[in-house]
Length: 232
Image (cartoon, rainbow, N blue to C red):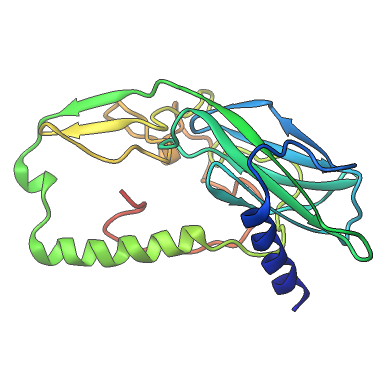
């Protein structure tokens, strides 16, 4: 009930606040880093607010999920590879018991980034699915999109993230676009390793050193049997 009321308050503040607002009284917000690249990850820190404060926000058109951290609240910020480069709006609203709600807003600079493009010529049967399979793929794609957008209210992970596969080389292929028979496909949001016949597990280069593992503590959801492992 309390979270629903705070969410409604935040929505009202977002509608009412002018875009020119850069900071609210005694509300200090720091972005790490100050500029983010396409496909990049950073975090935002709302300083000097109590753990029981209700904090809501958004950046580049996507909601932010805050959690108590270092004497304030923080949220991880991911920039989608299809985001338009340039200044993108952000807003943060803070509600505390016995205090007037506060809101801050501004613009976060998204820096352009180059991604690889791979042109492939394949038999048409490998590019276009038959009607029945295409319908099944569409249903599975919608289910996966819903799954990816579902965020649990509690933060399950702690500490640093680890590579899912032990390998000497970093992953490649993130953000890559494949042109199949002259037709562009959606950019990769994973890390498939391009240009190698021996694709390693998870797109991590070099021989794998053990089975894949979780990057951090969380809840696993299986896509076993799916035609596609990610929306495209």
